[in-house]
Length: 304
Image (cartoon, rainbow, N blue to C red; front, top):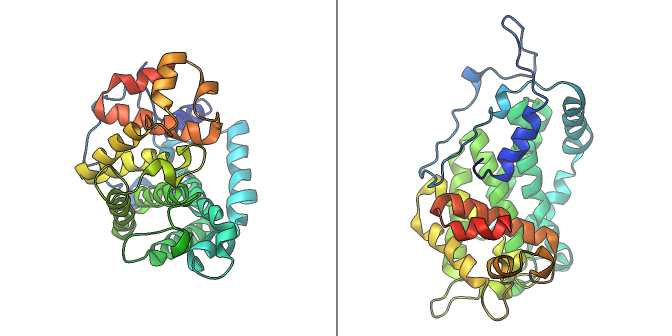
């Protein structure tokens, strides 16, 4: 079977418990008929490695049993109880005294958006929709003129978890764009992407991405995953070249050597400092870049 993305893997797992409504079965009041859904934005770039398996979109699923109950609990007990003010506070107060101490927590706004948008694709919920709209629109409004959409004060920018936070801002707003086709969301993502492309690279005056993230740079290079997706929506080759730069940066003397170590040893325990979360985020991005480039070296490294 061909390689699939993390998002597709989740959909496959859900499909194992799917029951399609029979003809004549009335939709529940929380289902959104296809004709009433916003038209999903189309990718501008086709993947070089085509999908072998295509799952049903979330809106075509009708779950039963354990998975349906877990979905309900996730919405009712987690997503609807999110503290939106806490998620957004770092963006609203990034340059106030003391804000740096919790700047890393900016990742949670994007994580919420991604989860909420997936839930709304499956089943509409007015309460969740309102929270999602508020978080997304507030994030967009917090973007600075240069494209920065993070939680770090200006004096500490590009340190610690700064790029990691913007990775999740990208993931969340790209999911929101897929759900709503809201042009402002894509513009915000392009602003972040443009800033990253200008800031990091190998040209004179640009910063080293490895030095801008924790865990031997893996927290920063994990932005690979949403940058691949941003390229697919925009066809802006600068984003694709930036993704390739991120992979090259692995092999710097102080870099995590992710691809090379996996090809040579086949052991994730020997990659960088072994931090699983950040490493897996990079592996997700490598699979996405493989699908865009057909560079089998990237796939081989992940499969090892």
